[in-house]
Length: 339
Image (cartoon, rainbow, N blue to C red; front, side, top):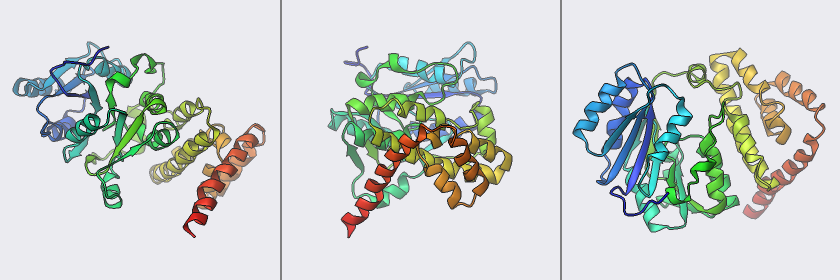
C-alpha cells in the first residue's frame, strides 16, 4: 500500500458498538483538534442503540468524519482491522469511544512523525501521562529500536487508545485475526519496535471516563478469558529470542497482574482466584515475580499453590535463572550506580 500524495495528513481509527452515551461524550473532544486535514474513520459494528444515527448527524456537519457500518457484528478485532485497511494517509491513530482527549494529542503525534522519520510508533501512558508530565522535562521521549523500544512499548500497547502508527512501517498481513485474539496491536507493536524507533508522549493524551464499569462487566462484554489477556500478551513476548527482554516484559506483566488481582478481589473474591490460577502455568512459568507479589500482599494460599503446581513443570527453573540475572541487573547494579 502507498501512503503518498493523499488529501489527509493523518487518520483516526475509531470503532464503536452500542456505545451511544459514551461516544457522544468522547467524540467531541477528538474533533476539537486543530489539525485541519485529519480524517476520522469511524466504524459502527452494527449498533442498534442509536449510535449510527448519531454518527450520521456528526458526519453531515463535519467533512473530516467518514463513517462505515458493518452489515453484521464482526467482532471488535476485525472491526479495528477494517479501520486500518481504510487508512489512506501516512499515519493512523487508534482512539477509543470511551476515552476523553486532553490537549491536542492528534497534533502532537503528527508533529513527532513529521520531525522523526525513524519513528514508526507513538504512544502515551493512558491515564498516567499527567503524572509522567511532571517527571519529564520534555514533551516526549524517543526510544531506540530493539530492546529499549520493545520494553517501553510492550506494557502499553495493550491499552489501544492513542496508539499511533506510521503506516508505511505497518505490515497489515501480520495483524493477527485468529479466534480469541484480543490484543493484536501488542504483536504489531513488537513487530514495529524490533525494526524502528518509538516515541512516548508526556504532555497530552487520553483519560478514561468513569462510566461505572467493573472489571467483571468489562470481562463479560469483551469476552475476555480468566487471564484478562495476560497470557496472550505473554505469548507474543515469548516469540522474542532475547531471554533478558522476555524477563523484563514478564516482570511488567506480573506487576500489572498483581494490581489487577487486587482490583478484581475488591469486586469478587472468587473471580480474583480464577484470575490468579489462570496465570500459574504461564506467567509463573516464566517469572516468579507474580508469586513473590502474592506473598507480599499476604495471599499465602495462592502463592503456595502456585509453587506446588510449578513443581510439575521443571522447565521453569531455566527461566528462573534468567529472572535472577534480570533482578540482579535491575536492582543491585542500579542501586550500586546510585551509590
